[in-house]
Image (tube, rainbow, N blue to C red; front, side, top):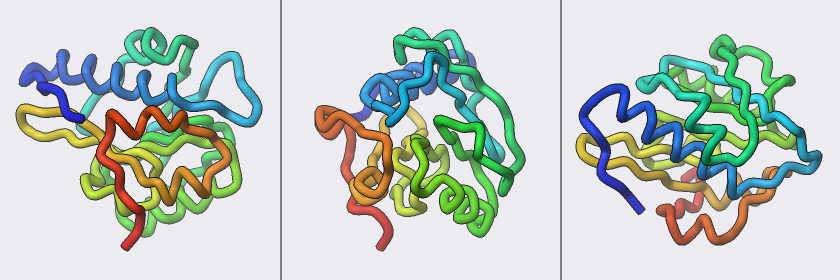
Length: 156
């Protein structure tokens, strides 16, 4: 499902933040933290808005920046911007077996190993999900999210 994507940068940030909050609201962690820690890594196109994420996630989310290829040990959510493929693989392998939701900003085919991938195109905003990545993860995503996404089988 895609929605109209605003042309104004501030409105884009709100739209993307609301989408991320919505994805979070469909996700359950093995241990349910009071506050989720969203780690941002890589060069992002959108400046996320914590208040909009919190509102749609129905719980507080703390944002922090980490270096591309850096440690993800203090992350409940990993949001990846543009980075070298080897750095992305390293970060994704660092969350395997842990309760971390992963979202990519720059993987339109959703084949890089993250659970969710945003579509940031001129005029529209949507997301894909990787059934493969979700099935291998320890966070649980409500199956109803399939209705509002474009599913992808995962890596080719």
